[in-house]
Amino acid sequence: TPVTTNMDTLKKQVEKFAKSRKSEIETLTIREAYRKEFLGNVSHELKTPLFTVQGYILTLLDGAMNNKEILEKYLSRASKGVERLIYIIKDLDMITKLETGDLHLNYVNFDIVELIQSVFDLFEMKAAKKNILLAFDRRYTQPIMVHADKERIQQVVSNLIVNSIKYGKEDGTTEVGIEDLIRNKLIVRVTDNGEGIAQRHIPRLFERFYRVDKSGSRKEGGSGLGLAIVKHIIEAHHERIYVESDYHVGSEFSFTLEKVKKFPIVNVGTKTA
Ligand code: ADP
Image (cartoon, rainbow, N blue to C red):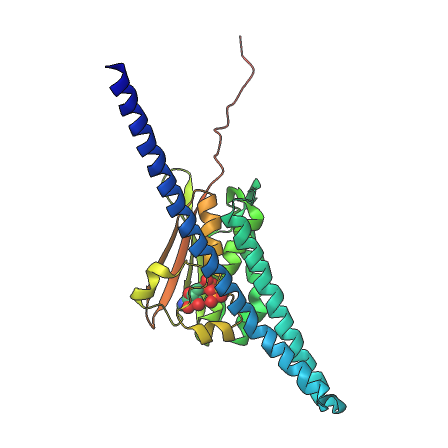
């Protein structure tokens, strides 16, 4: 009868609604837990450098500033702490934009060879401090044009190269290579012969704030967000990122990019009668 049909429909609708509310509530709870964990991590990350800066300032106010040498030393250390805070906040800003989808990708055609070279120039000094050689496979003397957000890809390359220096060993080598993949894809590889990563850490490596060695990473000035940012940027481009590592041997991080399609040159010659 129509009545039971209506009742059935109603019941089904109520069930469906309850179910959707349940999953909505579940999603909210997960999001809330996520948010709490994130905020917990953030305040923890900010605390360390803040306390350091405060420590130096308090010591100076306590009378240490009467000694010019100590004054200079402590001020420079405090300034390093502030620098680190700025660095962490920049990374936090970036990860928030990436995670909320507020980051608009600005696709352009650019030469990836030139971009890698410019990142090398940027970190030459940092590498030299550990006598690490930055080597670019110079089979690529010609420009290789890719289609992506140049600024964001520069950040990806920078983060990977900085990591290879931070976790690389003294007198080691960081090598960057480019290889053609299928169709119009290529792969950029950043390889180091540094401390490497034990297999059990690999699945969690790209999580924000995940570190293999917490104190080691903080000492190196890391925010723990570098690889999370890299992953987000690559995924926003619908590209792939890979990591291979052997503990105490070295690591290789690689990601794909889209090459600029080469259009065939059509010769529109004049017709000869
Ligand atoms: P961090 O700011 O700590 O460097 P990242 O997100 O960039 O944060 O990296 C996460 C962790 O992955 C690092 O703390 C480090 O333990 C490990 N890691 C990243 N790159 C390398 C590498 N090239 N060699 C060895 N370990 C690495």
